[in-house]
Length: 174
Image (cartoon, rainbow, N blue to C red; front, side, top):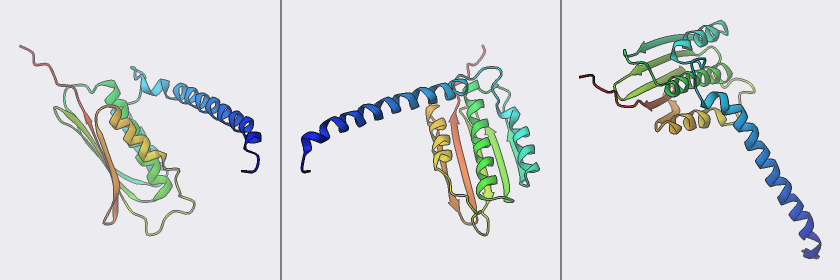
């Protein structure tokens, strides 16, 4: 305030450094997401949810799974998104509500895949369970990138995440 002319150069340097740092962070995130954003035959999908469930069970969670899948294979990007959403939900349960009962339902309709993960709420929050807030927003971004939606929140005695992932129209054979 007393010598604004002396502040010009340091502020410019800070601005330049900040822009360079943001650019570098974006590059790193692009690299980290590259394998995930381009699903291929090696990408996990709904079929691999069983392994996630076994891992959660071995960590002390009680997990029930219901799958109602159609005969038409899921598009790889939807398959991967469903897997990642279940993965994040189970991670959140183990972190924020250890020992909670978890119900996973995956249901395929003609025009969408619905993924619902519900868990009981702990009597008291787990110690040190504060989150960065990126888990739910990351799941939501994943669903929205496919044109879908994700809702998450607490209800009476439970926490629920529901993702609706649209499926492309199926061609009818003549």
